[in-house]
Length: 118
Image 1 (cartoon, helix red, strand yellow):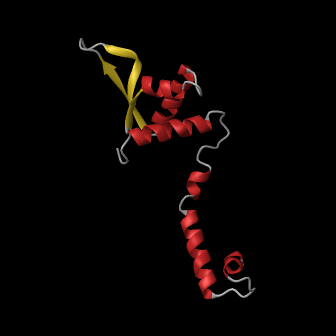
Image 2 (cartoon, helix red, strand yellow):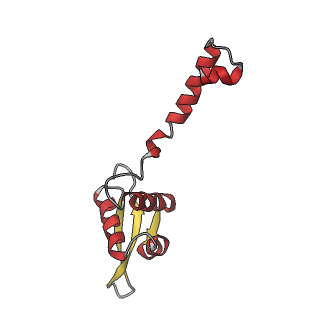
Image 3 (cartoon, helix red, strand yellow):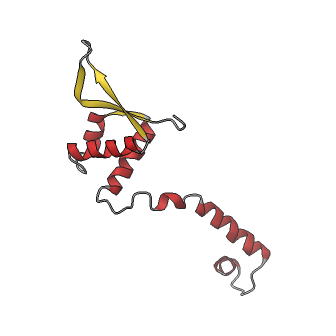
């Protein structure tokens, strides 16, 4: 009815109105799964979602970059927990870094988006 009203105000729905409404719904539904992506019962659901999106866009980031970007939202320990959650869910992998002497660098990792199927 809204599509019809926007066209001419008559109360007769035509096949053209139906086709327009169907097209509008199909285009809208494509983005619906994203609507509630950052919602959940965890108090960190939204920031976890934002961190996952940030990593996905960059493909790989260093922990220090994530800390700089999200330091107003999470503490260091909370960020480590978020990364662990993403790692266990199979979304990312954490790569330990080594210095030139082959010693592991603590407090900084490379976080990489996991390719599907691996």
